[in-house]
Length: 301
Image (cartoon, rainbow, N blue to C red; front, side):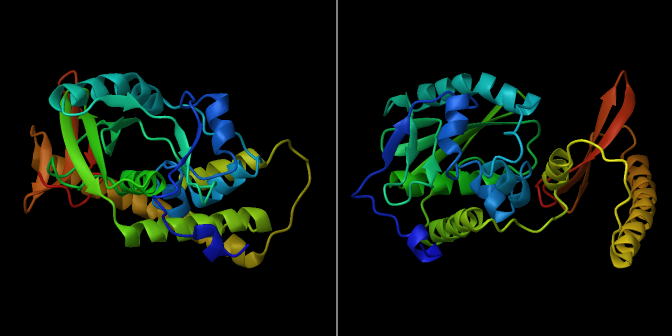
C-alpha cells in the first residue's frame, strides 16, 4: 500500500472507530497504540517532541525497546488532570465534560486519538507545566507545538473543529487556549504518519540524531557486554573527538555567559531583554541555586 493510500483524507461522515476505554499508561492502553500512532506520538514522528525522537519511537513500535517509563512529570500530569478538567467544567457549564474512549480513524486504523475529554461538539485537553515558558496569551493558540500536533490529530480523527486546552502552570496558575482544525496542517500530519508506518513495514529505521531519546534508545539496544574490540571508521573517530572538544569549549563559554547574566541580575528573579524572558534565577535558602534559560527563546516577559 502506498503512503498516499495510507494517509487518505478526513471523512467525518464515516466517524471514528471506538477502540476501547483504557487507563492511560496501562498495558491495555499501550497494546491499543502498538500498531498505530497516538496523538502524543505524532510529534515524535514530525521531529518536534521534547520527549521522544523518531528513532526511539520507531524502535518502540518494533518492540525492540520498552515503552516509555512513567516519569515524575507524567505522574503528576495524571494526578492533576481530573482537577483541571473539573475547573474547566465549572467555568464552562454550557456542555457536559465527559471522559473520552480511545478512537481510531475509520479509514486509517493506525491514526489513534485518545483525548482527555469531550466537551459538547469540541475536544478538551488538560496539561501541566512547571513554568509559563512557551505558553502565550490565554485564549490564543500560542502553546507548545508538540501539543498542537496532538490536538490536530485528535480533531482529524474525530472529525471535530475545535480543541480547548487548559494548562495548570506551577501548580496554581490556570490558563485556557484553543486551536481550530486546519485541513492543510492535518494533511501534513497524516502524510508524515503514513510514511512512518511504511518505514515500520519496510524495516527502514530512521537516522540517528542528537535527541536524548535517540541516545537512550541506542543504549537500550546494546544489551550485554562482549570483551572484544570493534573497528570503527577513522572519519567517525575524528568527528567524535572533534565534537567532544567543541562541547567542552561550548560548556566553558556557556558558564562564562551564565555568570555574566547572573551578575547583571543580582538579586532579581528574571533576566529580560526587549520585553522577552532570557533566563530565570532560582533561589534556595536565600542563595542562588540555578539559572534556568527560557525554554522558548521568544517568550514574552
